[in-house]
Every structure is written in structure tokens, then in C-alpha cells.
Amino acid sequence: MRKIIIAAVSVNGFLSHSETEGANWTSKADKRFFKEATCGGTGVVIVGRKTYETIPNGLPGRRMIVLTRHPERFQDGPEVEFRSEGAQTLLPELEANGVKECWIAGGRQVYTYFLREGLVDEIFLTIEPILFGNGIPFLSELAEDRPLSLVSHRLLNDQTVLLHYRTHRTGG
Ligand SMILES: NC(=O)c1ccc[n+]([C@@H]2O[C@H](COP(=O)([O-])OP(=O)(O)OC[C@H]3O[C@@H](n4cnc5c(N)ncnc54)[C@H](OP(=O)(O)O)[C@@H]3O)[C@@H](O)[C@H]2O)c1
Image (cartoon, rainbow, N blue to C red; front, top):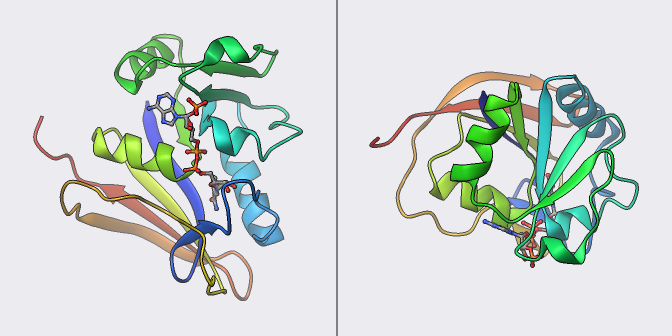
């Protein structure tokens, strides 16, 4: 199972202006890329509870898992589940159920958590042509440097760049 971070950032590395802001600032081309990448029968999209709350209509056609320490406060639906288990429990369960792609779709807390656990294989990073005055950074501190390999780069429109990286396993 591929574990893939998918994120869009400003040139100075922000995900949004505040934790309640959704993806209203990203390009149509990035939204199209996100939809094309994450739609498909064998994947799931994992988000944090705060990101979930910025997506009032959910992600139609996709299975979404929302990480929260309080799943009892929410009700699962046909396409959404609220889970509190750590990734070390959740990911093997998804793999055993035939999931082939696990899209780690933010926000900052969730991206940072999966990277710190060493559970990310690939990163798709869209860079939008804007500098934010302030906001939520892509990542919090990681314990160590993490070299990446560039797999590909392309323009999503005449202004927006998509970078695809592979991570390198550290330790075990
Ligand atoms: N530009 C982009 O590509 C992009 C992508 C995604 C999100 N965003 C933006 O990012 C912002 C939100 O990011 P954020 O970092 O504030 O919040 P977040 O990561 O979306 O959600 C944080 C919440 O997720 C739960 N959580 C996180 N790690 C967990 C773990 N290991 N186990 C169980 N639950 C866990 C906790 O929920 P509880 O408090 O319920 O326990 C925590 O409060 C929003 O503005 C959103 O629009 C941008």
C-alpha cells in the first residue's frame, strides 16, 4: 500500500491562512489534480478533524477516514469514518482490506504525524504562486532531516507547479 502525502502550499510554505480556512485559495488545476488522484476504487483519504471541518460536503466518491481523539462525538456515514487508532494500527488494517493507496491529505498535524512515524512513501506537493502574510505551515518540526528524491515535476496550469517526491526509509 502506497502512503502518499498530498498538499498544496504557498511559495512560503503555508497550507492556509487559519485552521478554519478550507481550500478556497488553491487553483482549479490543483483541485482537479486532487480529485483525479484520490478518486478510484482502491484508495482512502485520511484527514485530521480540523481539515474535515473545512470540507462541509465531504469528498464524494471517496472513502474518507477522519483522525480524532474523540470519535464518539461524530457519526460515521457511508463515505466517512472517525478513527482514533494510531497509524501503526490503522494502516495494516487498511492494507489487509485491500486498500492500495492511502492519501494523507492534511492538515499540518496529520502530515507531521505520519512523517514523524516514518510512514510516508511519497509526497505530491503543489506550489501555488502566492506568498501568505501568515498562516498554518505545511509541517511542524521533524526530529531530523529527511532527504527526498524528485520523481517528477510538471505545471498544472501556467502558474502552478506540481512536485512529486519519494521518501527514503530511515532506520527500520
Ligand atoms: N493546502 C492544503 O493542501 C491543505 C490540506 C489539508 C488541510 N489544509 C488546511 O490545514 C488546516 C488544518 O490543519 P491543522 O494542522 O490545524 O489540523 P488537522 O491536522 O486537519 O486536524 C488536527 C486534528 O486531527 C486530530 N488528530 C491529529 N493527529 C491525530 C492522531 N495522531 N490521532 C488522532 N487524532 C489526531 C485531532 O482531532 P481532535 O481535536 O478532534 O482530537 C487534531 O485536533 C485547515 O486550514 C485546512 O484547510 C490545507
